[in-house]
Image 1 (cartoon, one colour):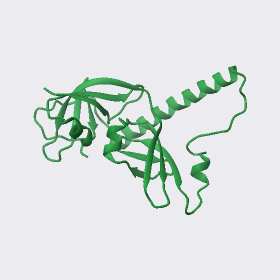
Image 2 (image 1 turned 180 degrees about the vertical axis):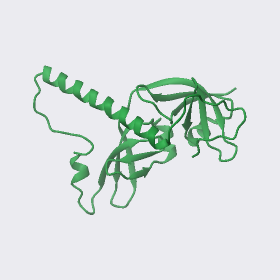
Image 3 (image 1 turned 45 degrees about the vertical axis):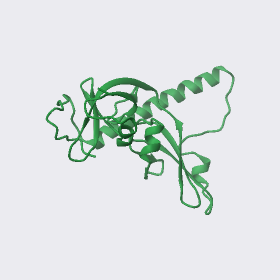
Length: 195
């Protein structure tokens, strides 16, 4: 998808600079900082409750992910980047747009992918990030059909499947879900209000 839109009615967004990779790295760093803080708080609460021994868990330490047996299902955990899952193995896994749209996945959500012996993919959201709502205006790129939402001097990319489901069109109001504590370039559509 392209960040440039060829629609004269779309306002310029001040302060947008840097490459897409830099933006993704900033989002990933913020997500990891938030996760680290939450883990530290959870460990403190467990310590206060007298629990001092428990198994170590995490994306890179998942027993299911590291003990793969040929012919059995393989488990990969990863982070949703707005369109795909970036796995703990460094690979990018395509998520069906209808699933991402229906589940209202947003950047930073933690997912588990089960790859069955027959090759089918089964995604499950296991760690949603905190969300906040905002309202913006839907716009479409006439050349490629991609959709974006403008609001609060920013733009968010959204999945076409969400717009199709709600039968949205350019100029409609969109209720978005975005990460509460992290910058994002993608958002999930919660609803569309027809104009």
